[in-house]
Length: 224
Image (tube, rainbow, N blue to C red; front, side, top):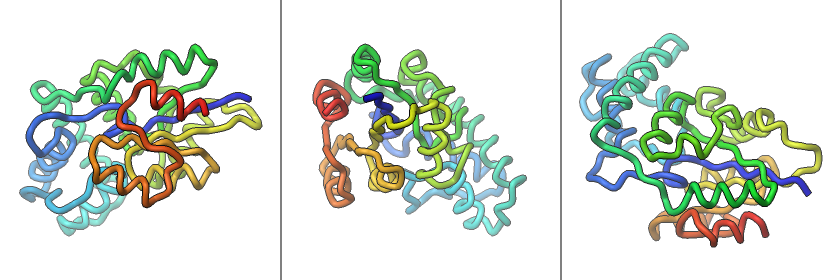
């Protein structure tokens, strides 16, 4: 049976190992300060599992700005510029042997794509920072620039990957939002948990399997 595996990005295939805040949150904070003079705009805001469109709406609300298309576009454009600059000194790193795992999946005839809350350019910058630009094909993915809801992002990824009729789908992610998005399309969900908090969340959300990193254990669960 044909199989499609869709990977989330943040916390699933890459992570930041330095002190908080991470590059994404830092770039958002800098963008909000640049545009609206709002300091530490993302304070107490959960970024993990969110989508860039939804995060932009929330942040604009904190600044008292109507979240229309123009304001969202302006904020995300500023965020991307700051993200590019931040990543020059604060790099992401792969979570396990991502390149090897994806290569092995493809050798098994599995189609690999992305389903991420990042806008496409943000995904491109983050993957490049972690040395994963050649591992994933951006044309085979759904992004936070396509849709605001994660389930709709997964559906967009399925369309771009031209998933064959009757193919099985596996969503790989690190939060409850990935689990719910996978369930919405009838997918098997494999969670990647790099800490106990993430493991507990994935377990409570009903992930079909949970692994510590991208490697052989992930391959076994994806191919099960």
